Length: 125
Image 1 (cartoon, helix red, strand yellow):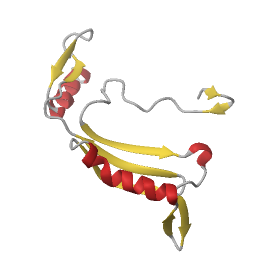
Image 2 (tube, rainbow, N blue to C red):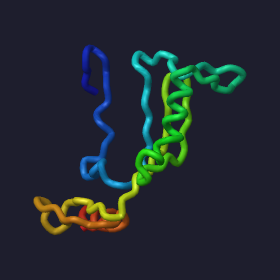
Image 3 (spheres, rainbow, N blue to C red):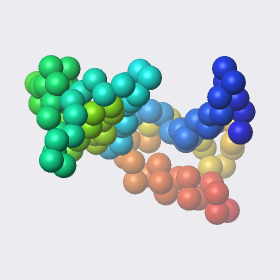
Image 4 (cartoon, rainbow, N blue to C red):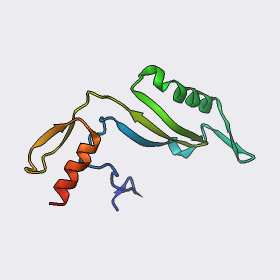
């Protein structure tokens, strides 16, 4: 595992063949700087949100109002991080994927299940 500024860090967990601007359901985690408890504290096994935590909570509730193609499915706020599942929809999006016949070319497809089928063909031929 490589080091960055003297600390170990993992390589990217992103899938190289996926366009992360594409519609889909994304699991997102974000941690506060220096892992400081900025969003609140745990009291009696329940989070008590700080001012910043209350703002974050309101932002999650408003995401769909900013763009109706973005939906927050679930989220949880913890003292120094949050998790959420963000669903991005766009029926007109065309997904660029590697052509299963020629690895140097890309083809455009419009459905996620087609991408899965295309990649299954590519890796299992």
